[in-house]
Image 1: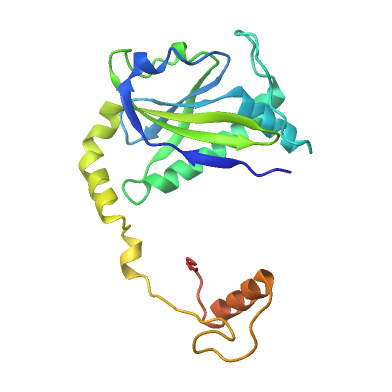
Image 2 (image 1 turned 180 degrees about the vertical axis):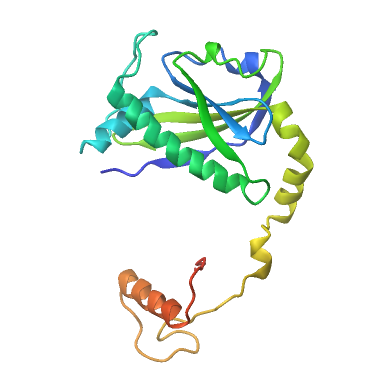
Length: 219
């Protein structure tokens, strides 16, 4: 099995009509609703990612696919892989939105040609977030999340504030536990000789302190 590398690019604001021309069907195009955001948004997955995930799922090395005929539909097995990917993506999106605004995401339509997923008119603005993905045997592709600008506009000041502070509401009430590993700082004992031993020791310390939830930061 191989692990993908994901690079989240900077969000772009553009006209929907400027986004469409570079997209070549067939693609996995899912129209979504993210309540309470207004209107519909779109998630687009490039076939190379789908076929690489499919090959990896069945024990392969993550081989992608070449050019597909423009009208080719996804098979039931391929559609199942797409659904698994979307389920994980929806959970991650809801988690990302939650500190600002609890949202509930649901799929409302499926296409292979983004021209048919008219979430807005071509002259209206959209916000594009692209995840560039490398998976398997030199397989590259992308997953796009496209929001209508009008859907996000009512929350832009809240988003700006969140970006400035870089702090969620939960982070304001966290305590900090600074740990010196054995043989370092103020801790006695022999130094640990492997990453696995260090991890086991830290887990034991966390458990002994009765900590149920933690975020680890080290250097």
